[in-house]
Figure 1 (cartoon, one colour):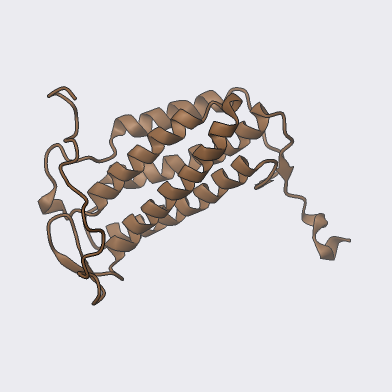
Figure 2: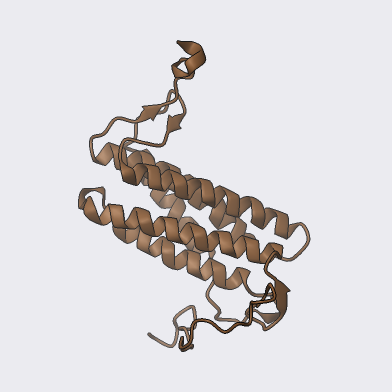
Length: 204
């Protein structure tokens, strides 16, 4: 990695996985502070970790459908989410200059990809429901978790300092996941599942 790389490479060794340090319901932030596992900051980056895992599920599905061309994009998003978790797990006073984080470049890239996909997608005349294929449903699941992470990040920002790029990234990523879910069905030649209110039992 060149010296002018934007972020430091990881410098850690994972040996023993369990430490018993969390047995009393506390864990450590990057700066070493001990906080309760019900701390809102942990809830935020824990939800980002949940999102990263669901994006991984969608990426496995994307590998099985190379015509979707989403696999490499979703892998990049996983790296970006880990970077986001790094900065959220760090109090502002402990942030290092080259610590991994999400940046405006990451947000701009998502916006560009959203715009490119929307160029070929038909306009929506109803809300869509998850379905059509497994990858579509997984991307929708990721979208809903992303929205939850965004809501939690906003709640945290009401009481603590949160990098504005963190909330902007989650907002834009949720939009991207929605567009990608539609784009997957389009690329695979599958119909979208549109919301039809009268398909409910009360409409029969």
